[in-house]
Image (tube, rainbow, N blue to C red; front, side, top):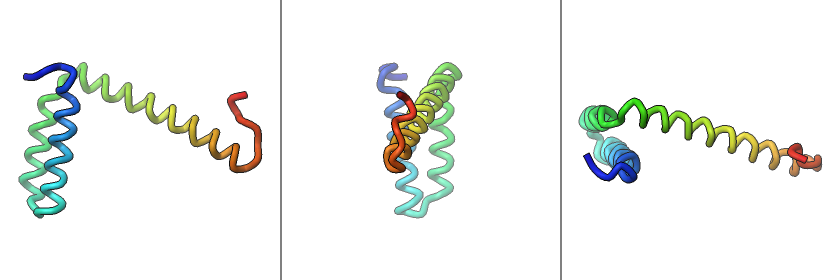
Length: 80
């Protein structure tokens, strides 16, 4: 299809573009179909990569929020 490094960012941009069309132009059914067709371009291995990166991002965000919460409560850093 295209450069393997740019495929997922381009698909994400396309999905955001069609979400904007649904929001600002009111073409919800058109946007839903187009986003669905864009999802067909993601392979199983790319889907697994997206899920793994999402899990890593959630774990990192939880750690960051727990550290910030501990600092705001006047507690020591839980990582130390």
